[in-house]
Image (cartoon, rainbow, N blue to C red; front, top):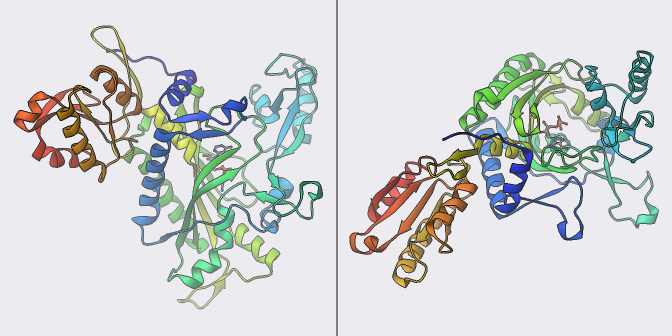
Length: 466
Ligand code: GAP
């Protein structure tokens, strides 16, 4: 058996063919940088979210959950600095109208432009010109480009007001990150729950950014889902808790089948003005060219609560019951894009194996807990009612506990192939012997080995493995 190179085309094609991810609005010609999750994809996404929630909220005494609105008072984003400063520098091609991230273009010349303003980037472009180097359009190669200008990533809406009346006074924003809703509910949680510092608030939800370039499948999209945890604490505890959370998040990936070799830390050199330390967990997205940010773990200081206290006029400090002193809690956050985690899981699970007959088997070797479908039930033949009835009976029994499929379409080989491609750990086939001996064939996704198991033992056999 030999392994084949993974390309983004292979991932995109499998995702469409097997119901993981579809391009948005396809019948209207598509809608850039938005994707829809199909019947199999939503199961994987839900399983990932459930696994994150289990370890971040359910299993911890010091973290509670939240589900805040996507729309918030517009001042939220003034206070947070997003309205005035959540920009990416953009360069346009005057010939083909291609839009490019100016900072990414400078990276080609080993210039780290991640946190540079448009003016700083233009100065760098001039320096390059003096050395005889000019930027080129990434699409058509033209040098006929605009200068860099700041492009706001904030997505505006006109909630409750007619479109033609949209002005800066009545604009509302679709949240660019979910944590805004956590900060606005910090006081509610302290007042209504029995939480004491240090404690965290976690939530999973949609976020929206008007990304300039979003051409990497579900890696960078304009609508995406974040899983964020904001941990409130006294600054004296920051380093200890920060190190703990870094370890917790790293271990979570290993627990769910991401290999150590495909993970690494990236320490931010240029930090937001309020941040003291920031690390990313990068995943080796080989189909996108290598290591890229999957999750951020940031120290945010007291910036968020101080800003919201200032703009709202409400007290957001904390009375320490031990010292009787008030202070504004500092925050550390863990923030991961569910879609990027999904793409990492697909990378990790995607395997092509050459079988003895020369055929290529594509199989997604997910951790069983993440697999969209856990068991598929097949009658050996579709036209034998007694086999169909027994397979259906077993499907119905197990489907109340695990997410299962029933399939009687096509030959068994094709049915195995489909289940391999969606990563189903076990296929159970009912054949003629089953009716006589009260047993079934259980086929293992990874080894392809088949075992006869008594129907009465099936539950215990599967429970141990799922
Ligand atoms: N609250 C902090 C925050 O939002 P960020 O680094 O801007 O920090 C955190 O985003 C995570 O959200 C990223 O590590 C990434 O996984 C995900 N993310 C950000 N922008 C994204 C986009 N356009 N498409 C998909 N995921 C995105």
